[in-house]
Amino acid sequence: MSAPDLAGLTALVTGGASGIGLATARLLAARGARVACLDLEPDGLPDPLTGIRADVADDAGVREAVAEAARVLGGIDILVNNAGIGAQGTIEDNADDEWHRVFDVNVLGMVRVTRAALPHLRRSDSAAIVNTCSIAATAGLPDRVLYSATKGAVLALTRATAADLVHCGIRVNCVNPGTADTPWIGRLLDRAADPAAERAALNARQPMGRLVSADEVATAIAYLASPLSGSTTGIDLPVDGGMQGLRIRPRT
Image 1 (cartoon, one colour):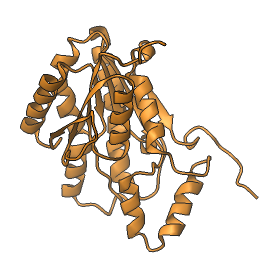
Image 2: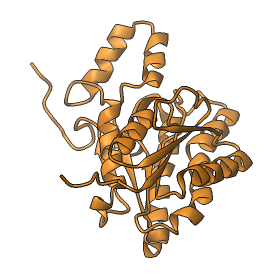
Image 3: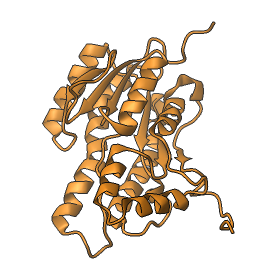
C-alpha cells in the first residue's frame, strides 16, 4: 500500500476551527500532513490538529501566529487561506466602514498570511497555496455585492500571485464553492423570515438541487494542495453543483 500523498508535509489552514476550514484540516491530516489551524477561536480542535489563535486582520498577530505554526510543524509546505466573513446587500446597503472591514478580512487577510508564510514556503519542495474563493467571483448573485467584490479580488489575487511565484516552485490556486452547508449559512438561514423557504431557494439555485458540503470543498482543496497536482497552478476550481457551467431547463 502506497503512503498517503501528503505524508511528511506540513499545512497551515486559516479559519480552520469550523466549516470548510475544519473539514480541510481534518482531510489534510488524514492524508498524512501535520496541520495547524489559525482561528479566532481555535480551542477544542480534534487531534491531531494544532490550534493557534490569530486574527487575520492584525498583521503583527498574523506574523507571530505563522511563525509559531512553522515552529510547531517544523516548516510550512501548504497554506490554505480559508478565513473569511460574509456580507449581504446591494451596492446601496453597506456603509464605507463595512466595505473596509470585509475587504480587510477577506482580501488583506490572505495577503497578510501569505506574506508571512512565504519565507517558509520558499524552503519547501512541495509548496502550494490554496485560497478559498467563491462562485460569487464569477457569477452575479443578488444581494451579495460587497461579498462578491471581495471574492473577485481573491480570484485576481490568486492568478497574479501564481504568476509571481511560479518560478519559485510555489503553486497558487483557488476553489470556488457554491453555497456551502456551513455554520455561517446556518446562521443566515436562522435570520430569514422563512428559513425553510430560503433553504429551498438556495438548493434550487444549484443545478444539483442541494447545497455543497464542506467535505466536498475540502476534497478539492486537498487535490490542489497535493504534489500529485504538481502541474496545476493559477486556476480556480468550481465546487458548485454545476452552478457556474451548466444552463439546464427548469424541471416541469
